[in-house]
Length: 67
Image (cartoon, rainbow, N blue to C red):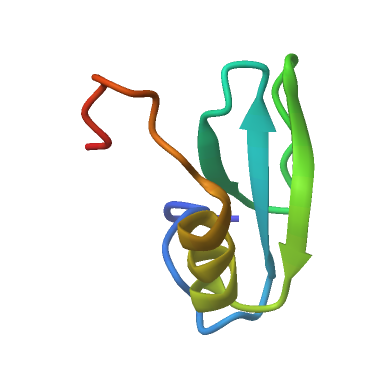
């Protein structure tokens, strides 16, 4: 495999959303091991679906910038 595994390839490899105990969300690829302390909360074929999931479920802590 060459290139960046997080580049959008048109949905060929699928996308995960992973979350940690602090409620932080991240996009992840199914063929990569999920890092320790993170768990999968969404799995789908396209990046846009994963981003939609994050937008619906992520809530920034009060007083903490979301960016």
